[in-house]
Amino acid sequence: MKVGVYIGRFQPLHIGHLTVIEHMMSHYHHIIVMVGSVNQAASIKNPFDFELRKSWIETCYKLMAAKKQLVPKLTILPLNDYRYREQKWENELEKKVQNAITHSDTVTLVGHEKDQSSYYLKSFPQWASEGIAQSISISATTIRNAWFSAHLKNIGTVKKYLPQNVINDLSNSCPAHRNLLDDYLYYQNEQQLVIDCAFSDYLKFLSCRIVIVTQGHILLIKRLKTPGKDCWALPGGNVKTDQSYMEAALVNLLEIQEIILMDGLNLKNAIKSQQLFDLTSRNIGVNRACMAYYCELGNTNDKSLPKLNKTSHLKDAIWMPIDKIKTMQLYNDHADIIDQFVEIF
Image (cartoon, rainbow, N blue to C red; front, side):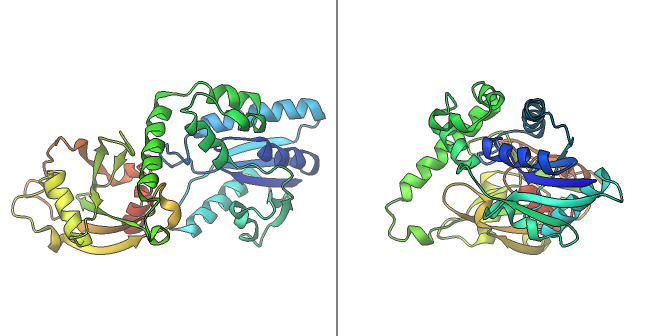
């Protein structure tokens, strides 16, 4: 049996995606659609959850199958992102595909030609690949920007690129999307503030995060304000011009976020390693480079977790068991940062 595998984020599903699926219906007996970024918190780049995207694909597939009178088997599977561990992403993809096929099946990865998001077509030499010419020039980024620019009220000229079921859902935004609209407006304003900077091409904001581990738990905070309002995240913040990364990390944790960990603790001595995270794709708005510090705290005498303050700068702060982190959707790339130090995935 010929199996075609199509990988995408479908944020949202548009007719460019559907042209690929329609092509596959005529050339493959089994179509596997891998829906990416399912472990990411809702964001401007990823506003729609897996179940919604899956329903979009299923509905459109049924309509196309009825029209073409072709009904290849359809399998829709979730796929995580691992921003700093590409090999993990490849291993998960291969494992999920292998579990969905039989030993005698032949697999082909299918995607748009000359599309930077289809780099993976050559990453699996054990499978064939097929590039499909892009007959429709539209991207999901353009659609999302139009939707947010219209304050979620309409999608204007990009409406023609969307199937009706997607149009219906975008016309009925949920409260979580309104939080994302606040993020979008925040970053739009941020970009306007630096647009006339003489060195705008070289501008980066600097930030810091701390991964603090003790007794199988990691310290997380819940963000109080935009961007990322109500998201769980690592403690930390921005680096001022008169601070080093480490100074900013300690000030944000102990003074701004007012988290008291253990009496008499010298947090500098608890730092075991550090790493810079500076992928340009890790954020929206002005590019942000993040220095993260990994700290291990000693056990308390009674084996209890250090007490945490609830401050006006945070919505909450908790010690989260490490094994639960991988099931959470943390702000931005914070789960990936944790994974670099602790390997939660």
